[in-house]
Image (cartoon, rainbow, N blue to C red):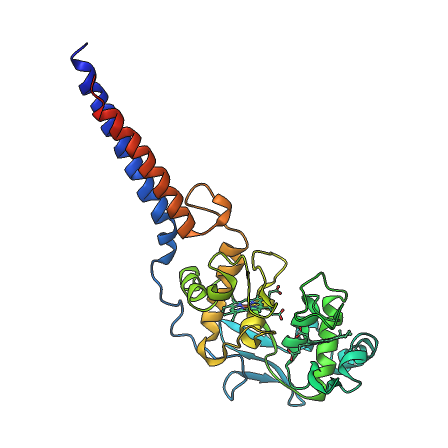
Length: 309
Ligand code: HEC
Ligand code: HEC
């Protein structure tokens, strides 16, 4: 046998192992890259928790709140969002409410008992215009089947303008917060959004946002759905629909904006900077595939190098 062949074979193998090593480090660090700098952007920005305060609120000539909030999120009244006066909106909203909602929630939106259960058709008073708008614009309301445990998201039967009109009328019966959040994603931090999502949301929605079953026939829906708007994500965090917790003062507006930016970009449009997407199974599964493949190929290379004639 040619004496130079084994050493040639060994150097090819060494180069191969080197390439493989570089590749696996690259794969496993692709996700870690998102995690650098976990601090919230704009830490000095005044932040609040979705409620108006003496210093963050603008009112119209009649003393009605037009908007409030911080640089991270501005909460606007339905009239501010639509450009219609409150009186105009409420007139349209009242008629739409009577047609689409009153049969279940009552003529005064104060809820209807069903078989003695006050939760069956809940009161809508004091919920805040953003909450009413969330349930209509996400197609949950008007309920297709009021007996199901959890109303499903579907294309909305009413237009956004109609939804905002109904929320204006219902809010005129009993004011509540939040108003409609307008999220400033431009100045929000993706890396902070990722870590806050992992900490606060992944337990139910999973780390990839794919959604999961919860107890008693309820489920955390998939967030990998670009129909879910930035406003809806912010309202969900601020109000806690159904079995989702209301995060209240534990998350500032800046943190909510960071999470919204992360869901709108990485969860709804995963760009898979780490190479093959593997169906977006998430860092653990991807790391596992890299490991299994890497060890397998390394073992083969070792056999090949160690092979004696
Ligand atoms: C067929 C009956 C029905 C109709 C019509 C209906 N709802 Fe509901 N609504 C329900 C039921 C039942 C629930 C509780 C279901 C749940 O939590 O998933 C509910 C829940 C809600 C909630 C959440 C309340 C809370 O405390 O979290 C809002 C807001 C709401 N409805 C608004 C509306 C609006 C606005 C309309 C009209 C556009 C409407 N609904 C029409 C049956 C109905
Ligand atoms: C305890 C479990 C739980 C946690 C934690 C949780 N959610 Fe949810 N989430 C739910 C459930 C349940 C629903 C559906 C509510 C319903 O439709 O009645 C939901 C609904 C949503 C929706 C509405 C989606 C749609 O289809 O319209 C968004 C957006 C959302 N969650 C985002 C978040 C974010 C962001 C966090 C973290 C800040 C979070 N959730 C934390 C359980 C959870």
